[in-house]
Image (cartoon, rainbow, N blue to C red):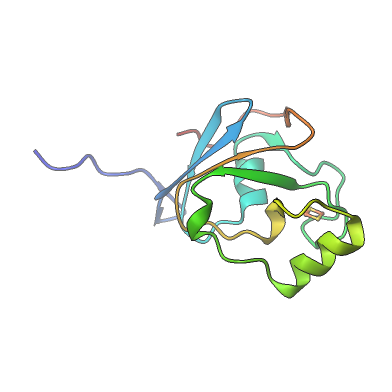
Length: 122
Ligand code: FES
């Protein structure tokens, strides 16, 4: 018996399983999806009224709990944004992360609000 076909979003396979802690909210998204966008699709507001992903508000910071070994290193833009916002070294800006594997993240300030019905769930 073959593997069950995956659902597709916008014609692309949902090949990255993203889990948000402590809510345990999970979502599958296509490779290349931005982590901030994945949170939004899951109904989580990591950066409500933030900068919209421009790296200036620092409201989207997350700590990678699992799966971070394959995440691209911080760009110079992210490093500068962290420096100018006084962000701890082990935190990452969700708006700078392009997903290409399963990942578990948590928010340093606790629970991100589950603000809306998720568009997709794992
Ligand atoms: S959304 Fe503002 S820094 Fe990421």
